[in-house]
Image 1: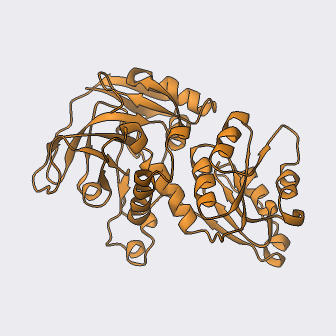
Image 2: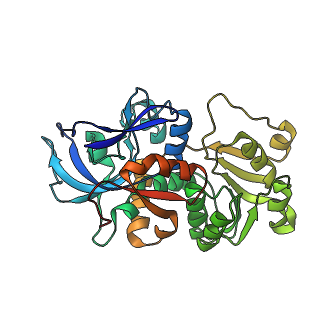
Image 3: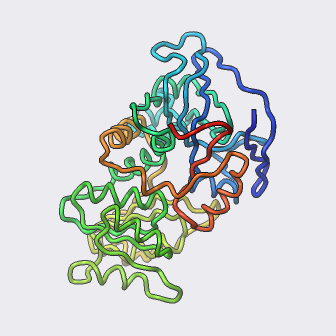
Length: 348
């Protein structure tokens, strides 16, 4: 089969590799459609110590497809079923799982290889984070499950009350999902980004105000201007992963406010925190990573019910052979994300 293989940052190659076999507890799925993701772009540019520990490695993790082979011991799944899976599952045995922090699991079972014709889903993901795609939903739309589950995790862990003002920093796929989910909670949402096109999508998804982060402007003041009495947002969510924006987020929030840092910054970076601001303004600052089986379930229900519309997130279709081009476009912020289609696949 044809598959994208990650060798090192900036080096992803299309190769002919063996079609994987489904072992005990596993499913082999023929990919119907995969999606590019901000994490894929970051991995392509700088690697990823958690997702890719050995190279060369299969690449890509958002997909929907059709079950083709069922491994020994698998029950409830059969060839021909249309499925979507998250990209990991916890062990439910380690300390962090037992105290309810499954995204911090010490033994997460990860899944890579969506940029290919076939993929094998590991037992733990089959057991915990695999869903049947509803009739009428396209593979590419179902493939939004994993990033939406991450955004749901952020929203679940962030106190947002009806009527709160929420500032979302970044209008990439995750930022836009935060816009939609915060709106769903009854918040008044402000979204900041450099891209006018992405800000237009943010408004489509419910943002009441948008701030274009032009070169040299005071973005902190621009965001605060849209908050009641310019006191700052009740909640700020950073969804880019740039240390400078982490620091700015702390200055956009009101006294007693909440800051959620979701965007993953590069390894080895750090931020400076004004101790007076943090202490005397009684700020709550949290980092959020990944998803849990619960938030995957919630995300699936949101997609299935139509409360989160997948359409605004997918900017175009590229063939599997052109996946690197799609990653480059995604990285240049040309569109939100791209559907990757294997040879001979439609969008059903």
